[in-house]
Length: 77
Image: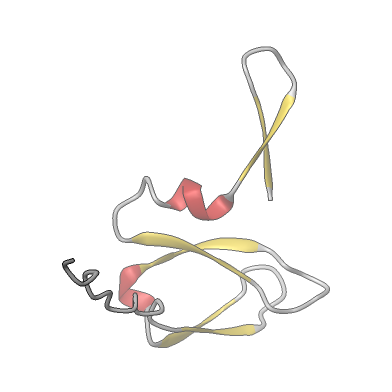
């Protein structure tokens, strides 16, 4: 979770995965170590590779995103 200040000075909670959607070829991952849980931005070229957490050095396997199930159109009546 990322906290940002809004125009009125009150904190606003933002989803880090939504933040990375604005950058082409970049997405957010979270360290699986329960003592760390740091969010990092990872590039598309790192998919199917192992990267290390910048803070605790835990290896993180970056997998492909889950496939969207194919939907069939509803039958015509």
